[in-house]
Image (tube, rainbow, N blue to C red; front, side):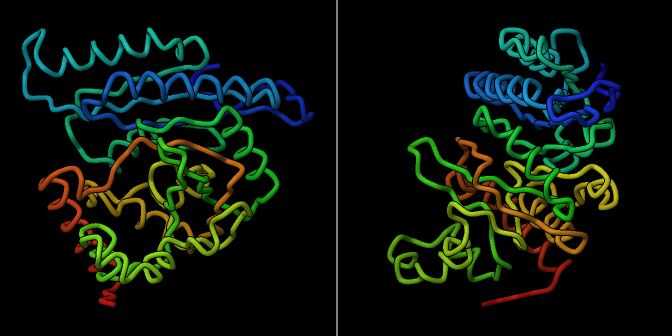
Length: 300
């Protein structure tokens, strides 16, 4: 079975026809250790899925490194070689087809995933950050939930940080005040508006029970039905970085149900924009303005 063949005539452990879950990961000079751990977690979760259901997985790695040099041995060739080495050492290619897309430059997070989405053929497509560790049961739990809930077009998981605390990646409809407080306010202001921020982050609902009707799902892990994702046209590539996930999940919610499923568990190594320097702050602000211009302004 290849990455372009989602089907297969076999029967899974459940007796149904088997298929494929596609995964895409966008990379931009990733930390090698973190990527290797992420690939190992994908391999383990894929093995659990296949053993229980007969379903396969296919992985796309989208290298958004710059393409400034054209000579052999240039920067982009060196980065591609580094990534191929990490993939080879991880052993993931022995578990599933792996396609490395490179040479297109830094087209942005959503546009990078779209390149993989257009090539995939699986019944489901998982959009994934490179700094995510999947629980070994994550793909299997996501598969079972999507199969049992045909009205769900997008699934969001329970996320933990490195220390084990919960991260709240599902959100209610944002306002400019919510975004400013959450991303950039000093501690005393966040404490003053703790109740407001908790509501925005859906802390009252996203615990240990599934939630149907989530308004916004974070882009670190987005499990889609392929037919819904194709109907939506994937990510809006006008969002270079930040808010492409809000835009896509908002559009998905108009098509079907977006669900939070805590049985699907992941660990996220990532940080917030304000911790990544002024470039990320500028990108965050530009995408926020684009988002509100597209979907309507809400100040407070």
